Length: 429
Image (cartoon, rainbow, N blue to C red; front, side):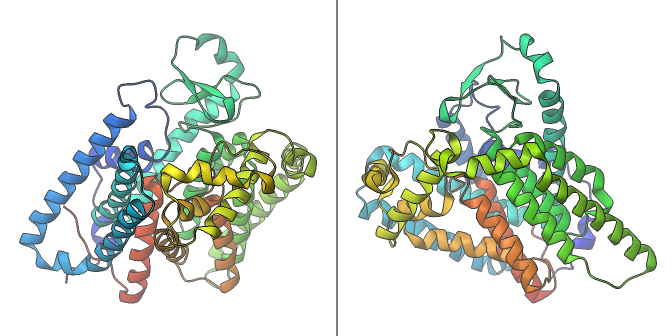
C-alpha cells in the first residue's frame, strides 16, 4: 500500500490540463451555458464526452494490467456504477422508452462515469483547490458584469442571444451570461442564477469543511458578494444554513491566537447572517416569493413549487421504476387538478430522478452525498444543518444529468472510506 497522498500531493503543482479537465466536467457539463451558440452543440458535446470516457477506460485498463491493486481499491465504486447502470437499463426497458431517449440515458451514464474517474484521478484536496479557484475567477467576472451591467448593456448587442428558462434570455459574453432583463441577476456562466448559487454554496462549504476558511476569507467574501447578486431565494437559504453550520462547528480549545481568530470569524459570520436576514431587499424578495399570493402568479418560484408538488405525487405513484423520459410530461401533467396548472419545467433532482428511473439510482446518489456531508467529524446538530442545506440545493434544480453531482457523490463514498482507513490511496493515471 502506498503512502498517504495528502502529504504527497501538497508539493505537486497541478497542470493547466488538470484545470481544464476539472472545469470541463464540473462546470461545462454541469450547467455552464457559455458553450451555447457555439459549435459545441448537445450532440457534439455528447460525442466528446463519450470519447473522453472511453479514453479514461482505456487508461484504466492499462493501469489495471500494471497495478492489480488498482482494481481492488475501486471495487466498491465499480459496484455502485454497475448497479446504477443496470437499474437505468431496467427502467429503460420497463418503461418502453422511445429510442430517441437513448442519448438521455447515455448522457447520465457518462456524467456518472466522469464522477468516478475524477474521484480516482484527483485527491479531494486537489479537486477542491482547483474547483474553488475556478469558481473564484467566475465569481470575480460575474461581480464586475453585474455591478456595471447597465453601463455595459448598450455595447453587447452583437454577442449571441441564448434563450433560457421561464421566457428569459441572455447575451453570451463567454465569461458571463448577461441577462437581457432588468434588474440584472447574477448567473455567472450558468443557465440561471439558481444554478450559479449551487456552485457558490458548494465552494463555500468546501472552504468551511476543510478548515481553509480562516486562510481564505477573501475567497469567501467574493463568493458571498456573488451569491448576494444572484438574488436567489434558494441560494440565501442555503447560505444561511452554511453560516449556522460554521458557527456551530467552532469549538473551544487551541491557542489563544486560534481562539481569538475563531471568535473574530464567528462574529463576522453572525454579522453577515444578520445582514441577510434583516436586509430589506433580501427579506422582501424572500417573503414575497413565499407568500400565498405569489404562489398563484406565473413566476419562476411558484412554477417551481407547483412542479415540486406534482413531482412528489408522481414519484410516490411510480416509486420503484419510474415512468421514463418518454412518458414523464404526460404523467406529471395528469396531476393538474392537484396543483392547479400545467407543469412546463422540472426543477427537482430527487422527485425527478425517482419519477424517471425509480428509487434505486436516486438512493445511491443521496447516500453518497450524505457521506460527503460527513467527510469531517461533526456533531449531530451540525450534520443535520448541512444535510438540510444539501436537500434545499437538490430540490431547487435538476442535477441528475450534471457531472458535478456525481463527482461529489463519489468523493462522498471516498471520504467515508478514508475515515475508516485513515488514509488516502494515490491513484493517478
